[in-house]
Length: 148
Image 1 (cartoon, rainbow, N blue to C red):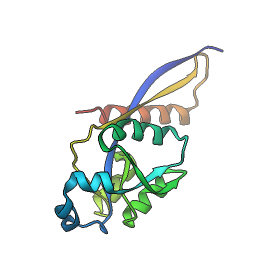
Image 2: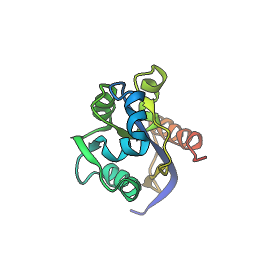
Image 3: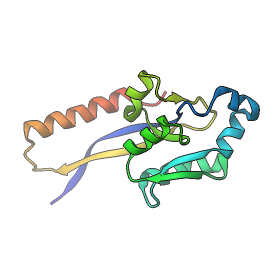
Image 4: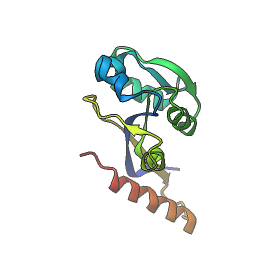
């Protein structure tokens, strides 16, 4: 069958850290020094997420020293909250950790990471009420995450 893109979503990546890296540490070497020399919590090699992060950050940092590689963002979020390294994750994924103060967003001069995701389904697909709800949720998330 013929498939088409119905709607796209943007997901913004932000750089985060847990509390083992102190503001005093940042003050001694400066933010640029911390970012260049930091240990990063990354997705596994070959992951589209890791490729997107590298594409945006490597031109500015020249290297990403992995502290560990994970197969999902949830594990990265918990590792960052435990202070094991810096992470670049979707604001949606870390919203609760940010609101509870378990993670802190690092404001950097680095470019914002955006990724496009497409909702693709068969033109003649009968959409169940549950799938319609999910698609509406995705569209709502898209409308609330447009770049500045």
